[in-house]
Length: 197
Image 1: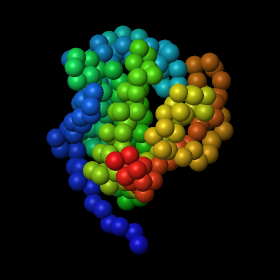
Image 2: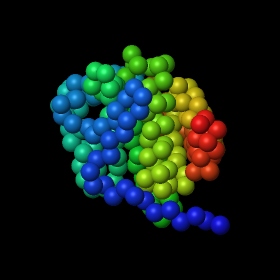
Image 3: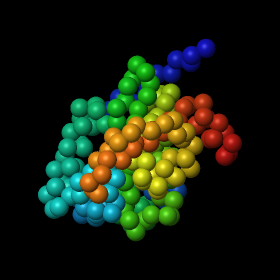
């Protein structure tokens, strides 16, 4: 029997999320320098998008993301450290399909914050938001099959690798790479949450 769950999120006030070490907030020009530090880093962006060249690129990016929120197309959070306010990464929810109750996730993290559990902490807060506030039944992560860090992160969060799309992504090395598709269902997430309480 399919449970009918209605979203409680309507793209009104921006949804600030809080974890033990992080506060996930809306992109703003005042944190442009922090965002540029990872969006402009070619190592961080190797499997993502073209690195920003200037702070103006980042300011345009911030405004584009804020506009997507106003258009009810995407939610992107800046993951900020609660003790300093520094923005160290981002998590986005996009391609939200209300009828089919699914959405996709994207993420970035400053290189000096790798290996400290911040991406996992950020994403767990966003998973809770998606399953509870967006009422999705399925979340997806699409990532380069060459991106070992991203593959491990998806698996650590409970996502199941469901397949690969051959030569779908052109990377900075000039080569086409396979795209790995991961999925996480509401029932699977609920099982993980209940088992960790």
